[in-house]
Length: 340
Length: 110
Ligand code: SF4
Ligand code: SF4
Ligand code: SF4
Image (cartoon, rainbow over all chains, first blue to last red; front, side, top):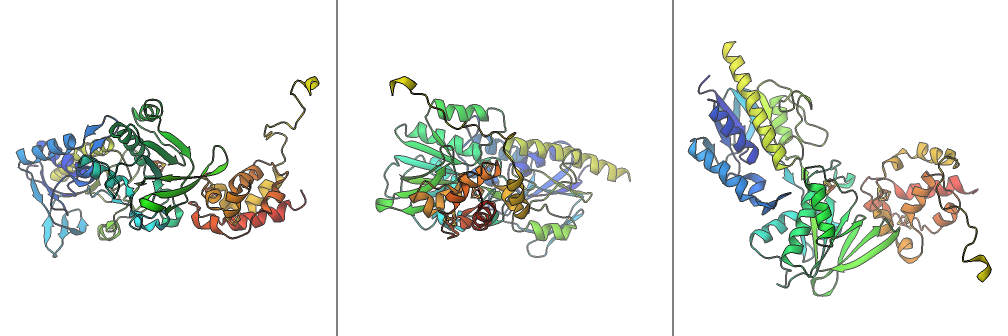
């Protein structure tokens, strides 16, 4: 089986974890990454829920292991078509292989599309990804350099929203919003933080406990209502409107900063890739496994596998598990095709 | 004053689904099944001009109607100006303005 080649599309945590497992089991993985560096979305995050572990502590060891094992990595390289035995790269160049793994992740929703929240129009409207970036840089500041005293965090931006054709729940933004609320309070205990939600989805170990911590230890205010619009006030402040549905009354308030918890959507090139491979996409534009139970990391077509958020929003832990499982399935597949 | 110890008899507050007649409510949902997808987010109420100026709460009224609480719903819905702002923001894509008209039509005799 040695030197069976597996083309892994995407060098985020899914692709790296999978490559390491494949290499350790004697296959020859090659990671094809469109960006100039490995690490994917996680590399842009500051700390991770629910343990506030620095993202770097996940990304760096994976990268190091890739280097130690001498795994081949092609950076700045886009894949335009896939088949079980061959992937086509950007300039029509072909890469022969014995199996393909989709680890291509997802795309963060472009908050500018929800114009009513003013992202890219007014100062002091940020996305959850922008906030992570600010935290990595060590400071959360308004556009005028001042510390925000009142911050609103809005859940479900670009998720669960027919108006932007994203019906699905992005699953990890609720817990990200709670994590970010706690981080903001730890950095600026004087600041007031309000989370506006439609439903709070705390599905994982320690998540509900974080929610409770945000309430009890930090007095984060949770308002059950979706912000309908933001408008500018003087000095970069914003006025937001919602219904406080638990009291049944409209609510408005001014804030120094509005953070939009943007969701994950399927990549734009999922469709051309799926079409080239002869597989179908889920209704929400993500890839989907052959079934959600015993073949949950395999596509409809033999020889094409998947792991991570390319097949649905999921947490980093879940992504890593899937990558490991998929590597195992790929090894079995390569062994079988060897005998045949 | 002192004789009633601050108590008085009022209509029970409870929404009694066993007693409420859901026929009208079901009729409304049959005509506009999209209302079934409401997640109670309150965006409609938040955006509603009438609701920001008066006690009118569109989300509350259509939710009460779905529970079979029709009394006063028609009068409340009459505060709606049919401007359609709520429709622009509903994340479920419900034609909320049409919901307002439908409730008025169905409950005119309540
Ligand atoms: S996880 Fe929470 S914030 Fe994210 S889409 Fe689902 S309900 Fe909305
Ligand atoms: S259509 Fe009626 S309920 Fe909707 S926003 Fe206008 S006044 Fe309010
Ligand atoms: S905006 Fe739509 S989903 Fe939200 S409460 Fe109103 S009708 Fe329901």
